[in-house]
Length: 180
Image (cartoon, rainbow, N blue to C red; front, side, top):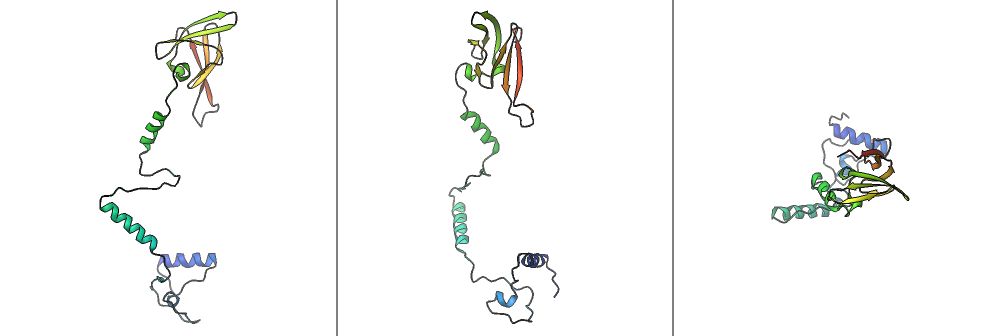
């Protein structure tokens, strides 16, 4: 028997690999084929035992869409392919509102104004984006990092980095009094 259709060849190959006996033309019609008989080529697959209830449901949904009803999609925990990726980024930015004051400041938004040695240790003064002055101590938390070290003429910040290729999950940012 010559098989010319590549889909039939592929289906036959899969049946051999999985150990499923191939459905012959006579069996597809509902009858039993005797051994040694050849099935005619190009016959349709059986349709008697197919469940078409799902197809009817899909067709009813398409009819509703054509009638003007809104299409709904159930992502089942996956990303909805019909929503723009750019909209998701904008929604994330809106959800992550920064807290007020120093915990909501980025390191780049601070301007170092002065460093003072006190009996309890060295402290720094910085002006934030809101034009208010803040006192910085070692360990002070900021939105994207914290104060690692305060020296007489500079402050060293430890900025968190969200870069999977970076060797360290942070980088050191040094600010001197003259920086603006």
